[in-house]
Length: 246
Image 1 (cartoon, helix red, strand yellow):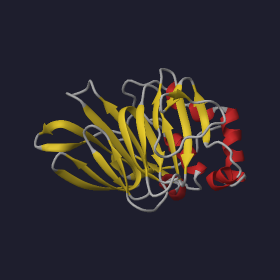
Image 2 (tube, rainbow, N blue to C red):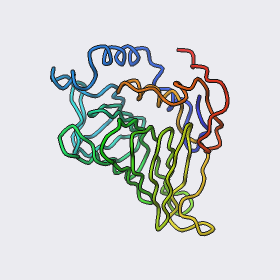
Image 3 (cartoon, helix red, strand yellow):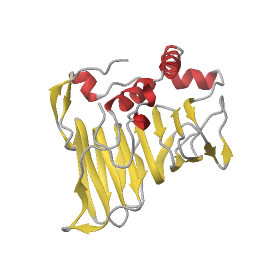
Image 4 (tube, one colour):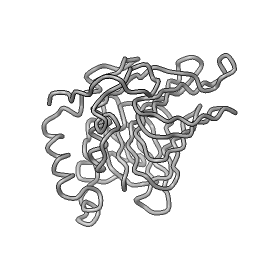
C-alpha cells in the first residue's frame, strides 16, 4: 500500500515487484543472509538500477557496500543493500554516508545529505540517522527519511514506520513509539514554536519496508499484528492487513 506522493511517482515505489528481485531475495534468505554472504565472499547488493557511485567510483554488479562508504545515486537509479543486521534502500538523486561503527560490518549512522532512504535496523547499540534538519536515534526499527531542500525553506521528512525512535530538531526532543508510520517534518526554522511538526505518511510503501525486513529476518509490526493503520502519520493501527498481490 503506497502512501500519498509528493514529488515521486508510483512506479518509483514499485521496484519490489520485479520477479527477478523477488527470486534473488528468496535465495539470499535461504542461503543464510548477510553472515553467509560475508563468509562466502558474495556481494551484499540486492538491487542495482542505473548509476550508483561508491566513494566516487561506479558500483558494479557483484561488488559490495560497507560501512564507511559514501554513496550517490543518479537520476532513475536505485540501490538496495544489506550491512550486518540492517537493510537499506536509496532512491534516485540521493547522497548518503554510511558511517562506520565498531566493525566494518556495523553501521553507526546514516548521514543523508539529499534524496531519500528507507531502512530496517536490527536491535543493538544506538545508531543515528542525520539529515540537515533532524537527528533520529534508532533502537531497532523500520524508517523512511527524505530531504526536501526546496520545501518550506529546507526541511527533512522522517517516518518511524515501526518501533521506537528518539527524535531531535533544534532544541526540541521527542520519543516516537510507532506501530504504523508516525511521521514528522524537521523544520529549518520553528513553526508555531515547534521544530518537529506532524507530517502525513508520504513517498513510501508498506511493501518496501516488508521487503527490507525480510532481508534481515524481520517482519513489520503490521505483518505480525495482521492489520494496517491510518495514513495520517499518527503511528496507530486500525484496518485489517491484506498482503498486496505479487
